[in-house]
Length: 117
Image 1 (cartoon, rainbow, N blue to C red):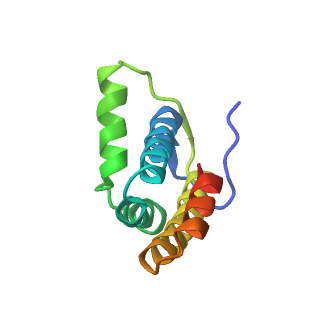
Image 2 (cartoon, rainbow, N blue to C red; image 1 turned 90 degrees about the vertical axis):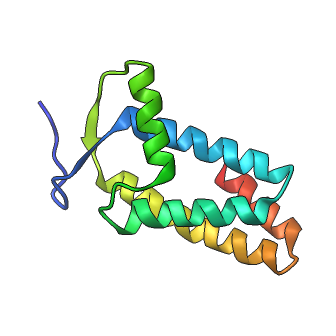
């Protein structure tokens, strides 16, 4: 028996979403040791695309789909609403990290990046 969300009938592949989350965490970890401001800006735009549009042009999602295809993972479709909510929260956090790091408040930016990881 499948449970549907009363708010949205859209579904996404959970395995692709987990790969995207892994890519996001790896990028943030790399950013903690290098140029966090530019990585946070890239993640902000990626989260913006995934959270606020229906466009399929997110670089991380495209890379994750290619990775899932290469690994021959069978899709596991789940409701998209929680993933969209997470992308919106991620966009907000990445925007704050970007502003903090570009204004010189790198310690605060790094702490928020660690929380997001």
